[in-house]
Image (cartoon, rainbow, N blue to C red):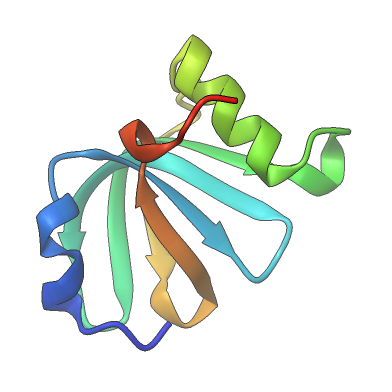
Length: 93
């Protein structure tokens, strides 16, 4: 992801969805944006390779049901990030 860290600062303190270039999706509270990592707290790290749900359907389900935290803190490498959005910005369909 080529975004400058300051572009993501508006999401600090908000629940975010982090899509990666792998089967992993991260949903949690953005604490910090570093040069190489996002620091995400109270995180649901979900491997869609282990389930039948897509990343999109999992994000919609999480918005509806709430985050299922399985990590207190996770560092997500920015080089692996495809997109970051606020959980509240997911549009229900």
